[in-house]
Image 1: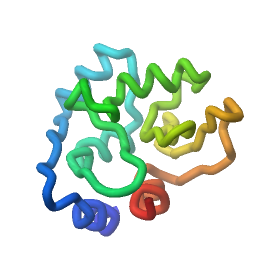
Image 2 (image 1 turned 180 degrees about the horizontal axis):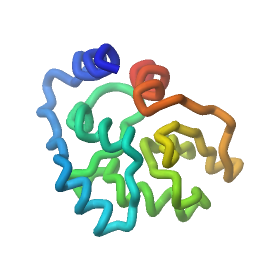
Image 3 (image 1 turned 60 degrees about the vertical axis):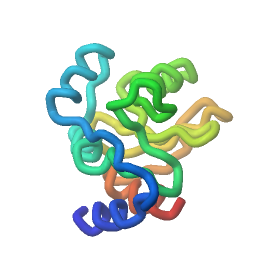
Length: 135
């Protein structure tokens, strides 16, 4: 995991300021205010690298409610597309969502077919390595 974090941070756009990163209290407030249960793997991801802006499909953020990547807004959009509420949005790219399951595995949802595609990653960090870093 640490090598993935280093690669994510190394790819941050040099001319951009880092985004605000949440703390545990911010995440607890988000869960309470929006009725979202964040899987442990997603919490760790948000706490460690949600401040980075880099190439590839952009993962969710939580500190700027006006950002296109703001988790509560993307969660509503995903639920409107039929995504089950126990899956939490990690990333949206066009008509696709990557979602974190309660056990912190990541699955892929296609809005075109209104269902899971069968693509799966063992953790958010595996998804980051295979999808975000290759984006």
